[in-house]
Amino acid sequence: MRKRIIQGLFALACSACALAGTVSIGFVADTGGIDDKSFNQGTWEGVKDFARENGLQEGREVKCLQSTAEADYVPNLSALADQGMNLIIATGFTFNGALAEVAPQYPNQTFLIIDSIVKDKNGRLVPNVANAVFAEHEGSFLAGVAAGLKARAGHKDVVGFVGGMKFPLVQKFEAGYEQGVRAVAPGCRVLVDYAGEFNNPCKGQALAAKQYGQGAYIIYQAAGSTGNGVVKEARERSQRGDLRWVIGTDKDHYQDGVYGAGKSAVLTSMLKRAGKAAHDVAVMARDGKFPGGQVLVFNLRNKGVGLPDSNPNLTPDILRKIAGFETQIVSGKLKVSEIPAQ
Image 1 (cartoon, helix red, strand yellow):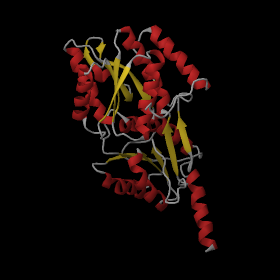
Image 2 (tube, helix red, strand yellow):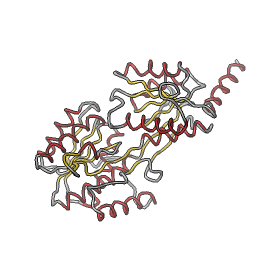
Image 3 (cartoon, one colour):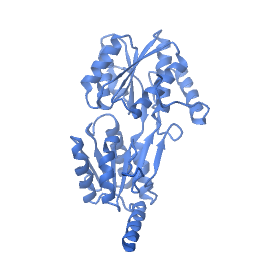
Image 4 (cartoon, one colour):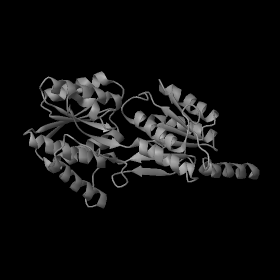
């Protein structure tokens, strides 16, 4: 028994230094697909950035497996581990159970979950799993300020929010957005709808059409690939001369909203830098500092969330006001709630 305990402790210790001096990365995308223009795509881009910096070859030292159903998660994670990938990355809370099952079976390999926290059956963090989470409410506050100020400038008093599934993580987007809108446009009404899924652009477009029909001037979407339908509706209406705006999430959606020369229906985007999380943890792992059993928070302070550097549809005055609120949040002077107003 004592020998087995010592071997187990040694294996866990090795997981912290498994990548030092050598690295290979496997990524498992969820059912939204690698090209979802959202979290999967952003994470994969971060992996590819790390690969380029470190001379890793895609298909050999860097591999990606896509999942068509949640039943694929355990087989895909296990397949990459069996192929010797020594850092394996997965995105989203739907991987929690699969990682809690697979990671302990490969104690000499390391795992990263993006946007969630993995715990074992006793409620403890798993030693060879790093957990990256985001302060979505902070970045969404800035998106709300942008929406509120743009609505005021256009003499409008209704904006909207379309979420994927209604649970606390997505409600953080809603909460921050509402607070940001009301900080600068207290009389503005915020319409809220949830699609109930993250991979249905048609439903996203239908909800956007509903909210625009109710007078929404701007809609903030936090709905994965479902949100692509919201962008499509804003673009098509604007192209017809019915000017409407959308705020993207996770990635910069400006190009997705383009409908004419120099015109895009995307007001701005709230970047949730999954790629930064993947890249930063890969660097830590490469340097023998893998943060196994830890929760890493990516927020405004460390640039884990925020608006794009380029915002062609926001005036310099609006950008200055947004910067002022960002300074207050980073300094701690302004606290943003994670819970939507009732």
